[in-house]
Length: 340
Image (cartoon, rainbow, N blue to C red):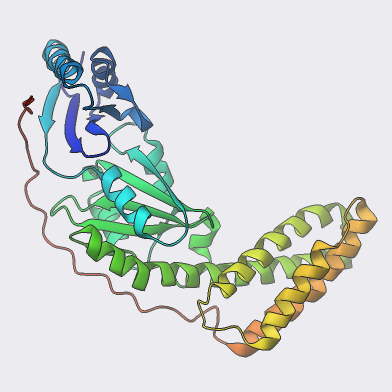
């Protein structure tokens, strides 16, 4: 038993009561929630539906009894849980987004590991929180679009403002030296949506286009080197990498990040899509032939994009990170009562 274990209870319109366990003795907090018949969710988080008030009251009574027995502190808060905020944002964004919630109060925490892929501008709202107040972040919602964009949503520990930032598809993206996405902060979902759509997502698409452009150039150089040195065993891997960065850059350019595509670029992308998807790589010879086509088309793409914007990989979106406020005292709550 551990007196340092604690559980925070939130009220959710979708889930009922959400229980967030934490502390060095978090395993005991999870056991107490299981014994009270709370339903297990992501990363130790539990929920208690309110569809049956009698069952919910018994579950709460059992939880408090066992928490007292195990030395677990139970507190409540009126603050909206991050899952509700994440779902509220996801439902109002374009495309289809899934929402997953992570518990940052566990050790180890999968959600904290995912935040290692944080991709933010220098001094951005999210990077500032994670650098200076990481230990005070309790939970995070991860939003992932059908196109592979991934956002992290959390609350600023000192004032409860909602902070949203981007995650990189791979660790190498954060070390390419390109412009980074711009994280944002706002007091409510409406304010978040405005800043996400006007600032964060455009800067995210911009950063991804830059990154894939630079990575495409690297792969083209590797292909030329492999071809010169006769390193045929590398053909398969290079072909896969080139496909990934070509189609990703194609996608981001078509998102209109830089406005309507010039006809020459649009014709190249459409022609390459057709020619490359019709290619055959059933054997090594076929892979080499396909790779030659990729090399030709990829070189044309790089040259054309570079001619349209010589500073493409260096251009950036001006960050607009608000100055952080001094931290305030943490909010404490009381045990919830049940009404019938």
